[in-house]
Length: 101
Image (cartoon, rainbow, N blue to C red; front, top):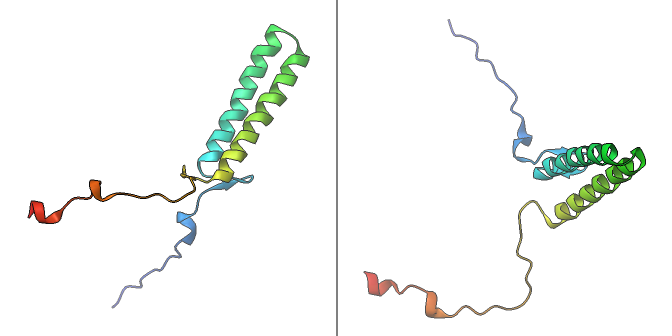
């Protein structure tokens, strides 16, 4: 008697970054941090001054932080070096293999 072997479908999208409301990967956490920071700063400002200033602070900090996050996301998930031009690397730093054999 042979036992039946069960097969399971494997989710193929595991290597893709998580996407939420247009934010990808690490930028979800940065955006969430901006929202939480905006709420905390709003609470502090509204208790020290007035509700109007707290609401204004909330809008400025939240939308400013999310705007910066979107700009950072457009540059890419990883920090990229975007220098342009022609670079000449001299042979000074190359290791001579014959010397160490």
